[in-house]
Length: 123
Image (cartoon, rainbow, N blue to C red; front, side):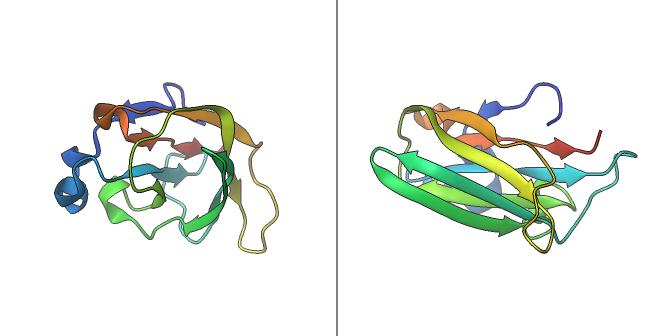
């Protein structure tokens, strides 16, 4: 993870999410190599549970260009929901092998914090 992550943002700052207003909770960001260049084709996985609903969601780096060339986005829910220690994020290679530790992150119930920005950078 890059320093300063996670960052909690209002999703409407991104044009493709403006119409959703508060009908969105998600995590997004990008993957960068040790030289700061974007890495595409890796898997980003969200697991855990949110308000009793099991999560197992995937995205591919490079699939969400709004966050950068190595960008990803995963919609977690249709509205902001508070959670503490029950949602996890991990970067995986194309075969599904871990490239990062499992990262625990919290979600917020406020519309102004319904997009969690998490950027991966290679050490």
